[in-house]
Image 1 (cartoon, rainbow, N blue to C red):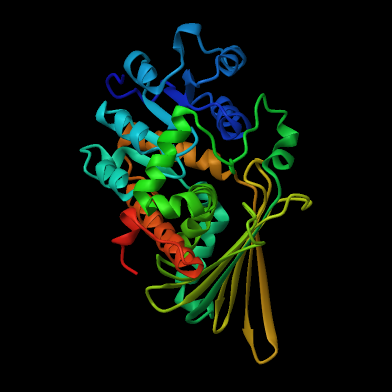
Image 2: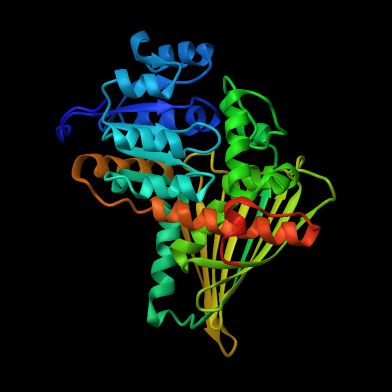
Amino acid sequence: MSSSPPSARVPLRIGLAGLGAVAQAVHLPSLARLADTFEIAALCDLSSGLLAELGERYRVPADARFASVDALLDAASIDGLLILTSGSHGAVALAALERGIPVLCEKPLAYTLAEADALAASPNAGRLLLGYMKVFDPAVVEAARIRADASSGLGPLRTIEVTVLHPTSESQLAFAHLLSAPSHFKTGGTSPLEEATNELVRQAIGPTAADALGRFYGGTLLSSVVHELSVIRAVAGEVVAIDRVDTWPADAFPGSISLAGRLADGTRLTIGWHYLEDYPAYREDVRFHHVGGSVELTFPSPYRLHEPTLLTVATGRNETRRRVVFDSMDEAFEIELLAFADLIRDGAPPRTGIPDGRADIVICQQAITRLAEQRGIEIGGEAAGSPA
């Protein structure tokens, strides 16, 4: 439950729902570093062990540790909620907004368009910040500025190329010594939470496609590829269509997935996302190629705070080349948290919100539709009625 708007001089009381990898490696230590702005006031997780140990570590009283989000929302006195649970966040986010509590929601926003539309219909829809932290990265902001500068010499955009090399979550998180490090890419299960998630996937893409391709929809597209969509949106505009999708090796998950699509202006894009168990380190490259040069972003592992994101701009003609490198170590997660503070205190509009999450669901449903067509699998649910 929320009280009156907090004073600008008093730290904001934040509740966290979900104490897995991203909470332990990123959000809890970031909130602790920003102690002048935030107080970790309440925790929620299904694991009593995590609640006890992290509650003690971050000095959260025992009566502010909860086994369910509803209990936290009903009993805790908080100014904002971080939703860090696995699966869809639509129902939890809506429950918080209905209580007037601002939300910072990690991706994915939701699994279905129906969930996104219910959130958009809330009177408090503008109080949700969607956790696409790369949009807050100074290198991404600078890339967008350079592309919008008519004097940059870049000229019209022709194509966008994205490559993600993704080793195991365990290898990426070994440095953090987490109490638990669950994988993003589960192979199924029968717990009530997992069954609820499976039902949302069936509503999104139909039962036949859910059985065959549900892991790609929830585990690869909505949990990882949406980050690439958010960077493209921030720098160049909305992805409006997916034309081709392929996955390989055969019967492997997560494996590799390739997507080809378009922006509204006809710019073509390709996204190659590759799960490589033994690859040395996470790497993500997003390249915007113009007729007069290129804008390239290289991201480190998202879990390693304050590692540099590199922006390289190459322009020039007639054998005269210019190459500018912008090296940003400002932490995007912390900038995002401070933007959340502005939303709570001042009602600042969210830079990323419900419309972005809904647009990503549309594109992910298109991608699964293309993959289902390629494999001769029946598509159903919301995706069957989405624009081709």
